[in-house]
Amino acid sequence: MENKFQLAKDVIYEAGNFIKERMAGDFAIEEKSRFDDLVTDLDRDVQNLMIQKIGDRYPQDDFLGEENGVVSDISKGNVWVLDPIDGTVNFIAQKHDFAVMIAYYEEGVGQFGLIYDVMADKLYSGGGLFPVTVNGKELTSFEDKPFNRSLIGVNSGMCIQNYRGIADFGQQTLGIRGIGSAGISISRVLEGRFLAYFTHISPWDYAAGSIMGEKLGYTIRDFDGHSPDYKTRQELMFVPKAKLSEILHHLK
Amino acid sequence: MENKFQLAKDVIYEAGNFIKERMAGDFAIEEKSRFDDLVTDLDRDVQNLMIQKIGDRYPQDDFLGEENGVVSDISKGNVWVLDPIDGTVNFIAQKHDFAVMIAYYEEGVGQFGLIYDVMADKLYSGGGLFPVTVNGKELTSFEDKPFNRSLIGVNSGMCIQNYRGIADFGQQTLGIRGIGSAGISISRVLEGRFLAYFTHISPWDYAAGSIMGEKLGYTIRDFDGHSPDYKTRQELMFVPKAKLSEILHHLK
Image 1 (tube, helix red, strand yellow):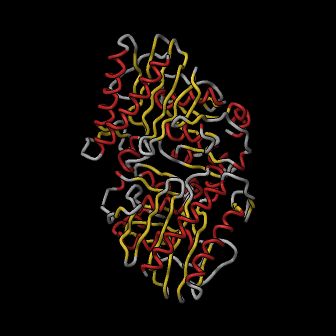
Image 2 (cartoon, rainbow over the protein chains, first blue to last red):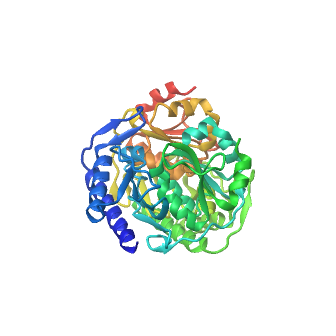
């Protein structure tokens, strides 16, 4: 497992460097479901690069990725979950606040996760057998704080719609922040900067954070408190386990 | 003016270092108007430090500051506008995403402005006679982009209330982001990461950005297109001049 974890780190840094080199030049932008659901050829190239590097070393392993219809089931065998550019809109509009993510599962059990905030050069990694660190510095478990001394991260669309009363819940806290990247928002929860994060996301958006969070007292749940399906896009929250029932009580 | 600009840079770095040293220890938090309107003793100490350093060199100059009731009128004489910690809530909850700001006016004319993103160690400075730079690298003037390839920064409270239709306008863009610091949000507009920023703020929140923005094609206006009063807290937007009429057309 040490070797796989080290490979994941090497691959994620290589992916980050590849993105930084290519982002200075031109890249093609394509619309997926609507004008603000975007993908670039760089997203696809980065995922291919990652699959090639990992597949060369572990040809029996499978992949679940955001791009190119790579959709293995994480519950069977050895599966790498890849998000080549999380926060593609930020990548296009800001060239900042995007992440590369890797999670690794064996028979449905998360072994480790990595979130790399490329422009800030911050690598969050660990979970399973490994301590959770940011650039090698160990992160501490969730420490209780009252809502009125905490910030929460919320997807801006859900916030505007007051989905399940999330904007009202925000009024009980010091405020709502919106970054536009699941990976970076989850990393802020892991660091204790946000108490929790609410959004609608897919498995490659939350797998890495979920594995690391498990180690530090956080959990990923839907708005009724159930675990996610690791297959579809769902409304989910990344919250401290110790605060789960209190948060569910505030949601409508 | 060169000397005053250099002093401002020295003072802002000193303020940033002072905050970084003190933030590791304990500091007192006080509520101002309500539970989420906070100030720390550090805000006040930093402002006092800045006034002392500048006042020692320029004893005739006046100050307008966020704390301690220091309220000179910027339209008369030499006035330094100070925000010791912009984004106090972020400072308390995240220890990140806060800024120190300085603006300098002579007879109502902005001479230079500085925004220091302390934890990212990024200093935005210039305006008036000086080019606008970030850590010494010159920033370019606004380059036109369509709304549907741009992000906007919006105060989360205004976003939730759909104040003057701002959330609806957000739907025409790639998305809404909420950082919780006027200084950092304005610096993202100056860098071209956000197209515009909408919030309710006071003179010390927008003075520095306004002076730098003037040089790069941006302007600070209320939601009817008028200039701010540089006295009270107002609903304001920091926008490219070239986009002002189009943005006003989208607001209700």
